[in-house]
Length: 193
Length: 139
Image (cartoon, rainbow over all chains, first blue to last red):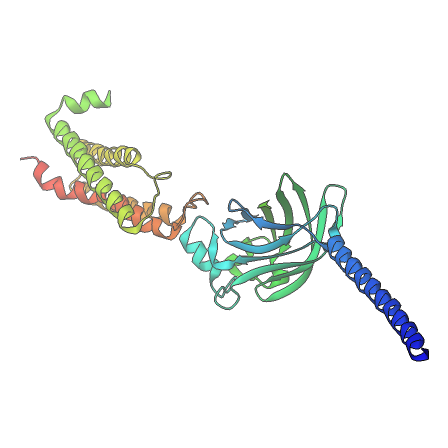
């Protein structure tokens, strides 16, 4: 009789504990999932008709190859992140001799540093659009950069300037000094969901 | 006026025919080279160079050479032809700088293949003009 009484109390207590544990697990899972939902941003694919133009004194051209991953949500900038990689040897200045010169060790040294990369760390909203702060690597030199951009109609657009001497691209001697330090970049990246 | 003068003189007429014929042959050679080169290299430079512009430039170049010959005969200097030929060779050689220095539209692929297409075309008119010269020598 006593045994049966204690046994029933033990079973009841055990069931209560089990229920509590179950509730805790379920709550934990819900909180975890909601956290993922909050931090989830939209994965976007880079469409083919992107363009990367550059111009400066005595130099103008495009890069023809862009790869990267884009996770961007205008309503959730904290969870947004992008990384881009541009193949240096796809440079086109419209002149074959200039192209060869550009990828040589005198300028970009494409054999040693085949890619220009940008990896975002933080996005902020600005008065005209957004800014992406991250690490830009060109010619093996990595610098922190803040790039302004707009996003509308599934299209990223950005105009910014890069000081080539910051990245040790070329020199300011001889004919190279005719090329301005500041190189303007005009980037358009359409994306699809 | 110039055309009238050229056609009313046998020597001038001969020079004009020399120039036009050299221009036509040079244009034919250039257009054949253009097509062969583009097909072999899988490139298309038609937005910067085409048969029409090649034919026009070749004929005009050779007619200018012929006019130079006509003017030389008017002046009648003994070594004039040699000097003029050197000037023509010099100008043709200088003209190859333009395809070397030219920046093509950025949407065109393989700009490094453009000079090898355009440079021979700059030399064809003078080569063919000089090649035909013995057939048009005044007897």
